[in-house]
Length: 141
Image (cartoon, rainbow, N blue to C red; front, side):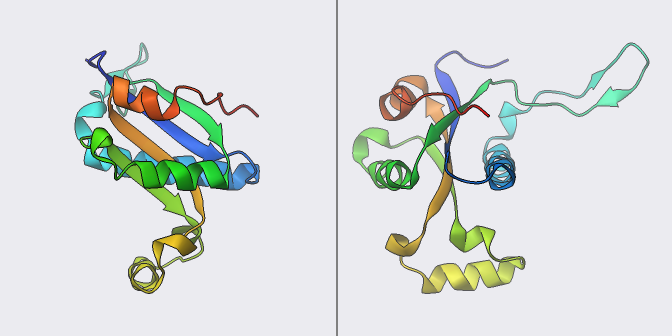
């Protein structure tokens, strides 16, 4: 059962093509779920007897941003007032490479200032998450 003082959001660059928005959300969701497996509920069985894998017990707000806002958000996450939040980012450095070892190497060679962020997922204390993202509108198709 989720705790009301915790919150999860994804902020995604609204200028991305729909397929890249979907890919970004998928990558962020996988990573945040790995870091916080307690977010995932138990498997459920339907009336037919089919089992469905557990999903997040937290609602995940999908918020829109742009490249500049994502960069600013990423930089704010190192401020002491936002310690304790879990942040996962997804950038062009990750998206353009298909082999994980190549991504690791490319990351080592690419300064943060050259990452173009496609999205950021945040999980943690609701007040902190809201301070960073409470003014952002929902991402809609």
